[in-house]
Structure formats: structure tokens, C-alpha cells
Length: 310
Image (cartoon, rainbow, N blue to C red; front, side, top):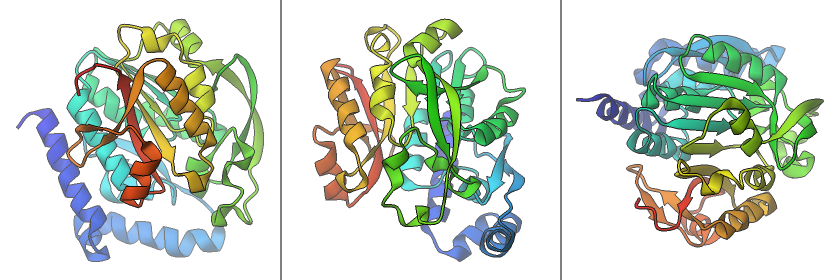
């Protein structure tokens, strides 16, 4: 069994545990499950304190998470939502030794670390994260990892300074440039984000400054998708450009930015694909209809240049 086959085998076991009962997850990692549940269900609700914890990764090594954020990684060694498992499978099937990756909205660095493991020391990963507390965790998670560099910045359509909204650790995956992105979300009712200022870059500019031309870009930016895509105009026509993966929200979840990003990609001849259960790609000409038919409120959609084989 080669490395990629081993990764896919591990993901199958993780998927089984993630979809199973509490007993399945307890059996997968008993000690971590008991401590993770104790912290998330009892300690954190009482004292509101996040806890730094080392989580093993299915592709080797460990990374830090701030429980209860990153609980799935701590319990199962991977991001465990169905869309994230399929994205990990896509990466395992498509990323190869010597490729480069740009991770926009890297959070704690799970997908940056996975990309680096797949592309090996000959490849490079540029991990971009705007939130100050999240970036501190990201820095620790990429320290000593060959080929990964972290940048604290906001991805945008112009250089300058951006206003960024940071939520507490439990909701840190919702950190955003767009203040109104989660106004209707039930969890936000009593949550007040910290407002910070961060450097903003077009990703075309940042890649040029860093001497990196990505083969694969992952975008997870909670409402700023259109700005990020607008800042990639040069990359779309570059010889390295192969895939762009972006979380796409259903219409009920304020997806105006996602729609604009999709339109911009179409102008450059890039077409959307859904990620199948086995990590392969299927044409997805109407993303919102796809989400509705599947009963999904969001999914990771992969875009690639027209005419490129799947």
C-alpha cells in the first residue's frame, strides 16, 4: 500500500466513525473522546476557556487545536464534515509531489499540512490567515514543517488595510471580512466579534512576492469569496493553475459573494465541479440546484479551466 492508498484507507475509517454513533467515535479513540466531550460539554460551557491540545493527524504528525474548536480533528485526526472528507480525498487523488498550494483562510492549518504531506518537500504551501489568535496557532502548527510558510493577511481585490471580525475560539471558523455574513445565524445572537485591522493583498500580488505559483488554491473566507477571486485574475491564465476549491453556500445563507465569485470564474473560462464520495469530480453547471437537490446548505466546489480532464 503506497502513501496515497494509506491516506484514502485512513479517511474511510474516519468517515465511518464520523457517520456512526457516539459509541463508534468512542471506539475510534477512547481517551481523546472522553476528554474532548468532558471539555466541550462541561468545562467550556462553565468557564469559557479554550484549551490547547495536540491532535494526531491521519497523514502523520500532530497539530495543535484550541478545544472546543477543532474538536473533530482532535477526536478523529481529520476535519470530519462530509464535505471536508471529500475535499481531503480530492486532494489525496490530485495533488502530487512538487506541486504548490495556496491556502486562503488556513485556520489552524489542517489542509495546509495535508497539502504539504502530499506534495512532499519539493512542493510549497502558502498558508494565509487573517485572524490574530488563529494565526498564532497556525504558526505553531507549521513550525518545522518543510515547505509551508504562513502569512497573516486578508485576501482581497486590492492592496491596503482591511477590517476583520474575529469570533471566540469556538466560532473561529466563521471569522470574516464581511460583518453581515452571519447576522441571521442563531449562534451569533450573544456573540460580539473583535474588530481588528490587517494587511490586505491581492493573492496574485502575494504569490508574486513569495515566488510561488500555485497549482491548487483552497478558499474558505466566509463571505469574501468574490474579493479573493477578483484578486486572482493573473493566476487563472498561468500554466500552473489547475484547481480552485471554494466553499459555496446555499441561497438561504447569504451567498451573494459566492455567486459573484462563480460569475468571475466563468468569465475566465473556469467551470464548477462537485466532489464525489470517492474524491473524483463531476460537472456541476448549476451549483445552487445541486445544493438544493442534495439537501445541503453548503459544499466545497472545485473549479478548473474549461477543457481540462477530470
